[in-house]
Amino acid sequence: MSNVQVTFLPNNVSIEVARGETVLRAAMAAGVHINASCGGDGTCGKCRVMVEAGSVEGETSDRISAEDREKGYRLACKTTVQGDVTIRIPVESAVDISALQRQAPRRTATVKQIGLEEIKEQGLFLPAVEKRYLELTPPDTQDHLPDVTRLVNHLRLQHDEHGLEVSLPVIRQIPSVFREQDFKVTVTLARPVRSSGKTQIIRVEPGDTTDRNYAVAMDIGTTTIYGQLVDLVSGKVVAENGDFNGQVSYGEDVITRIMFAEKPGGLETLQRVVIETVNKVLTRILKQSKIAREEISLITLAGNTTMTQLLLKVEPRHIRRAPYVPTASIYPTIRATDLGIALDDHVTALVYPQVSSYVGGDIVAGVMGSGMYRSEALTLFMDIGTNAEVVIGNKDWMACAACSAGPAFEGGGIQFGMRAAKGAIEDFSIDPETLEPMLMTIGNVRPKGICGSGLIIIVATLFEMGVIDNQGKFDRDLNTPRIRATDNIYEYVLAFADQTQIDRDITINEIDIENLIRAKGAIYSGCTTLLKEVGMQLDDVEQILLAGGFGSYVDLERAMIIGLLPEVAPEKVVYVGNSSLLGARMSALTNSVRQQVVGVTNMMTNFELSETPSYMDNYVASLFLPHTDMDRFPRLK
Ligand code: FES
Image (tube, rainbow, N blue to C red):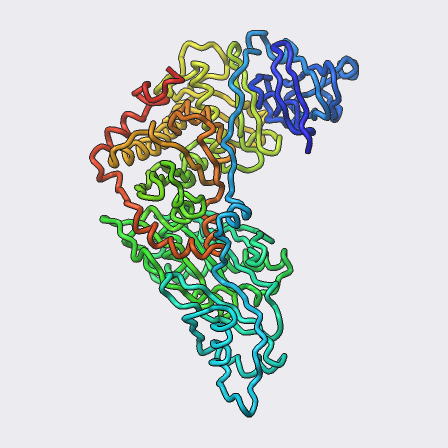
């Protein structure tokens, strides 16, 4: 889609946006405030603007009279830009000209997924499972070689394949398959995990099927399970799908799941339901792609330590008990059918290794999938989801830790917190004079709650505008009906009941802000503690890789304003998406990832923050906006 230029008057601020974007979103991106209370639903009528020049489209609204529409008035939330346009913010929408003062434009992290081209360029496209088409010489009266010897010899002499192993189930198939098309066969080779290991022949088929070879990559998340079907010939993702992890009904987080697993039959139940979800996602991606189940040669799985143990039906009770040890770090190659995964007998399941009880295979997958394990640059990897894990290092060393941040960034512990779904407030600005809000919701509908990225923007903006102080307390002297005390707790009304979907005022109060400060403090102090332990500082960090659910939407400036992210140039921050899924996919596409993952896992030194002496001091110092030590945030000083 082509870009167009939107210019906002009277401050003459311009921004390029995609054709078809709403005027309201363009204004938010440009840092131009327009009052907007209903999240872009078109019902509050507060976002009136005047189109002075250019082409726009939009429905009529009973909030704008025919006469005003004739004059060029429109609702910013219901008007899309179709060409270069000039928009005037009328005084009645902005309340006061001073309110048009520009706020910093939104700046999100550069999104980077390691592309197939990059893998190919670096010579890493070597799938873990490959097919070879062979035209074997049939036996005759002069040639009595056994079928298997004939196969192995041919692969050695014609394809330079050595150290092969053939399993008994494959040997059982060979006599008939070889003779079906006169000894013209395709063999599937599974590469060894260790470079010293043997290549396994896991399947024989009649004829040439080398153009059809697929793998499934899965992220086994505590809340959701995502799967991708990967074409191992082209390297492309041909289908993807996800669903809630069926275990959600047995507990929201890993601790409640572990407690359930300790009950009689609990572990078996949790393993069964997670496999049911895996099979459901698998069936959907097969249906989407119209690929037959037997064409899958491999499944790769990554999850946190608890999810991995539950998936493998390994008792997880010691994960939550001091001294917090997982049962295993590295798991052997497993037959998918042995776990109950509905794939053919020859399919192996590769499970990412774990570092510790709370730095699991999802984080190792992120380190591998993002390419951090190959990077010279000192990198800070942060996965912020239901909890937060951080890894610092480069190709030579790595230190990691889990930060007990809690689920604030996914809506937990926040009165009107919710996941990033339709109706969640995801963006916010405030009129510095009247303190009236500009709210934007996912789906442009009336608000229902606040998602993680919205929460960061709201708290940062209230702090920037002096509405709250560095301890997250509201300025009691501000004169606006939006700030009030309910049950002695101060709050700001983001949306009054008549403009919400829940018929209640949506507010953010001092307890919510305190929870957010604790969560961001845990993450920031986790990073500073790790660096201190290895004799480094945040200034030494050359790049930040952000992973996890909300990373791509996080406004970086605001995340730095609240002290969630260290103050670095925004160009240094890269969003890598669902890094667990990325790592699972990479280990199917490049066997070298699989071969190196054990070494990388062993290199990752885990720090238990609660037992690291400097952690508590760092944590307490982080319980301010942005921090007690403002030298760490020079731009905010
Ligand atoms: Fe546009 Fe409410 S009418 S934001």
